[in-house]
Length: 471
Image (cartoon, rainbow, N blue to C red; front, side, top):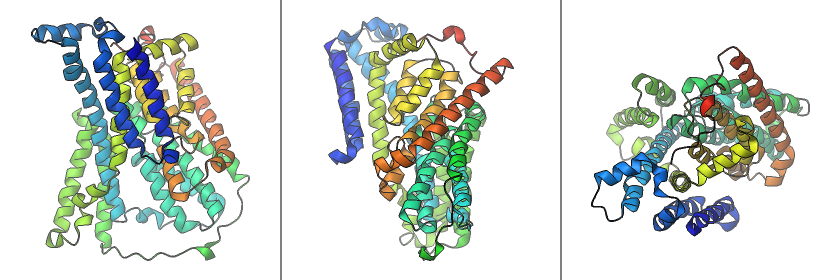
């Protein structure tokens, strides 16, 4: 059992190193990869001493029957069954993210987002605040909160020259980006994880999480509108002139095709029943063909405007970070740590999954929401669209706004604008907390009303509410 507790200690230490990425000046992907591999090494070395192998049930017995000559059936089962199965689930998420990041990077390379941003003319702070918030909210649902935050910060730099004003608007962008990502299956890494894993369907997460997510953004905006007055000083704006060499028709074409490729993914999944990464790869392949044809006469000079060139600029360390942290969480799941945690939380909170999800959402502002959601996915085996999963999509998405380090969007804005942690805590966190609780309260009310009409989700599989994930 010593290895069991060593794995817990290692995960905590590794996670602290990830959280302290900036002070340690070591990329979090390095810690995550080390953690992911080391967890499985420990499990392989001491697996049989952690839990009795019968926890794997019929799967392990079937494996032994199929491999009667195996000298180490437990180790062989872990390496050829458990690890490969987890790696397949992880790969689905990573390939989807890689495809989506490439499509968005291609649109940005062609300056496609300027089609929308160039139409913003208002200088009134309140009007601009609401305009940018709603653009961010719906952009995030289509693109993802990280990409949207990056795009919106680039826009803020053009529209708002004053540093303090830009910080405040940047804080609102974080709130709106996380809120927008929470109600879309492709808007946030956590919703992507839940969607790809078959925990939530497109319709359920959009119908049940849309209004709570919208309220979590609107309530702070209403309060802020009473205090944020005046006009943006446009005389200090710097007009940027950038010649990309790309005709307007090509920019419009790639923007339209890229957005359609992203929006088509849920439709593709519904029509074909294939996993989302297949849909995004289909869209990516079509864009690849189109860009190659557009620049076939001068491929060397225009290489960076094709998918081949864009692939060299995607954020690969982020992909490797997700690989490492998801491998680590998979190790905890396979070893039985998460099933024990699920039982403990059920005991403490008496199976109240509203409370559990709300706490997880708040924790996601301190601890990265990716491993938190991955952990919850390993703790329970409820059917698709169970209340736990749908409400979790809201909580894990919007809860990260409570602190600037609590979401990918927040970290991106913090890095680009050098926003101080304590400044955000003082000026934005109170609004974020108000919005988070308001949205959570509305979700509970909405769910009770729909449940009373027989349209809710809380009644789904209630008899199985305390069944942990089979190991």
